[in-house]
Length: 234
Image (cartoon, rainbow, N blue to C red; front, side, top):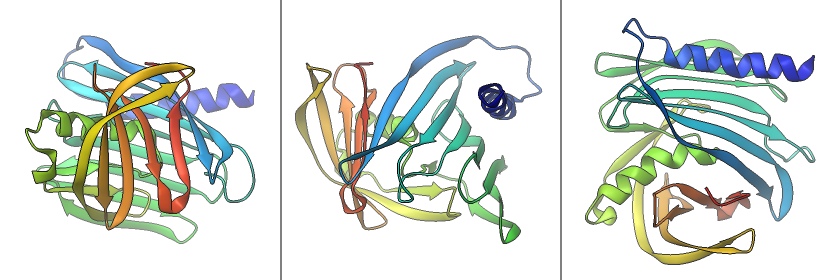
């Protein structure tokens, strides 16, 4: 029964982020898979996700399952719909374990309206939507649009980006400090990648992206001891 309820929650998010008055649209799979999360070197859970095209939009849904002690990630489900250039249209996040949190983001004209519900009640915030990326820091598949932006840039270090972290309701500046070629080993297979050294709100973040197809392979936030790695090659 519990598994069915969790699945129902994920499909509810999918229905929310894909809701549109437009006619039925073509769909196609962009990416899907599983990341393994670790905290300070210890296994902390898994993240399963799927990225799909829906017309010209991108729809992403995912689930993070927490395992381990009190310092592990809280379990949550998340869904987001982006337009063809990666701008957020709809977003929803809710926790399944740990402190209750429900976040809904809707794009209205040139603004993003964020509704947050937690133990303290309900509150609303708004942000100018222009060039604002949605990025939950410890959800690896959220880095997909960022990876695409960086790969499209002649010099990623020139990028002047800002991200909205939905769970905190705050924005943070994002800068690329450096990028270089690298090789990752996933399940005994060596994969060519590009390594991006990022600063997000002053916090170091490292992103590895497949050189072949631009898929996210690994994300690390060293100061937190957090690492998300694909369990298999995409």
